[in-house]
Length: 110
Length: 113
Image (cartoon, rainbow over all chains, first blue to last red):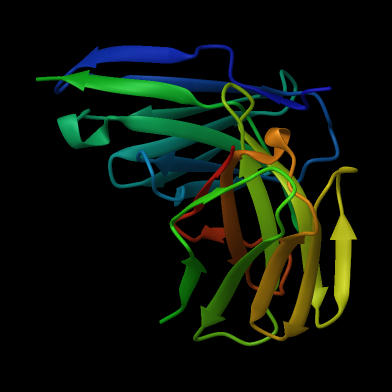
């Protein structure tokens, strides 16, 4: 039972354009959401989070949007850079525990 | 600042052998500690988490166990490894306050042969 789903295994974007990564969840009890970035053979790195009481959070080139009625969140990266190429995981949390999606591979072409 | 150390980075073990992976956190007190496994196409699966010394919660039945002998030390163990235990194991910590992000170590690539 996948409570957090990232339906796009991969995404390819031109440098300078917007990257939009999507994530859906099923459990309405999740109260915070996060995005992580992961390079091969390394641990994931925390990028940005959002509480369930908000619908948008912005940090530099990264913006996370939350649509609670649709149980959907997205990560926007503007402008995309080649160094953004990595696997991106969304995660949803209840209390001390996070549930992760399967990840989306982002490739930014220069 | 807080740092997390996880070792070894890679490990090749025969089937039936024991396992011990260690993780330590510096620069924080009373962290929540976690063991995750990354499997291909399935994201990060939570194996164990701990909110204090000697307090271990297991998320999935499996061939592994975890222990927390000290506040900032978390150990993943097995008495007899199976082929299916191969994978990328990640230790993580978070602040004890709620809704805190997890911070991961660099992981251990375990291959059981």
